[in-house]
Length: 338
Image 1 (cartoon, helix red, strand yellow):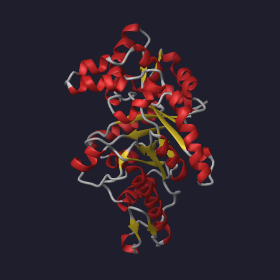
Image 2 (cartoon, one colour):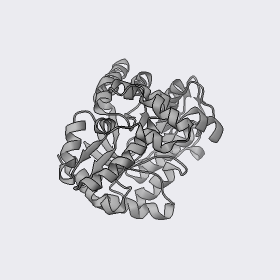
Image 3 (tube, helix red, strand yellow):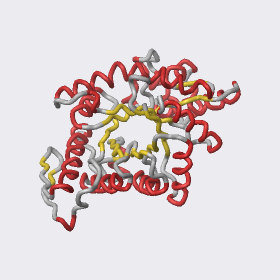
Image 4 (cartoon, rainbow, N blue to C red):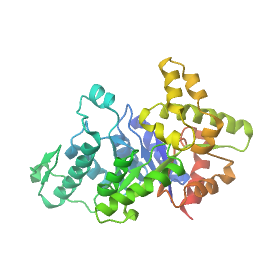
């Protein structure tokens, strides 16, 4: 099991130093989210500053970029990292895609499936000079040497997708190389949905479930004193209330024994009561959906909770406090060396 650190893209003048520090600390890799800044540019700078790190987008928004543009960016990053880049893609939600990016969103699941296949067709085209993808949403059949990145001395990038519901998980098993589990993806959800649905998808495409990486972001509460852990717990409580406000994720709470959590959070959200949103997340929620430990016990706690389920664990808040990066990095080193 590999351990990465999640990071929100930073100013390009600062990301190199942070990448080098993360590599020196012992992390397996960095996973770049995409918010106001692009994941790809941060990954490019990190690839040159810390060549030993595995880098991934987790996740880059797919639909506003053409599959060819995305494939070309991933191809260059795969070359720059000497084969240590993973392309993580997601749909985002309708409001962002339509009203912020000005792109189409209809039928997001089937559209993302076609998008993944189109990206992989572009990878093939860069090697062969022949582009021939005709899907439900994307038709790509023209490339010339002038407009091709050309072959590289590395395998094609792995393509991962963010998936929550059963259809998307099954689709990931059919066409993707990995699944980004939602930050609320506690072990019970992974066992009930992620693992069996990926297996169904791989069976449909004649592959093994071992061919699909399970990438799990983990919220941690760690410290050697009650006071230190109490501060961390409140930060995690606020993060969980943010993620838990999305209706599509309500079933994850419900199946874990916390029925109605999303409805209660949304009631507070509509009133603009952010403290009230966080108050809907009980200590019992946190015990189920986060990992709490002392520093000495964190590696064992993570292995006990996610060993056998996750291919890669992504520490959600490892880089949030500069004073704790080396301590989290040592935990990563301990786990990855087992």
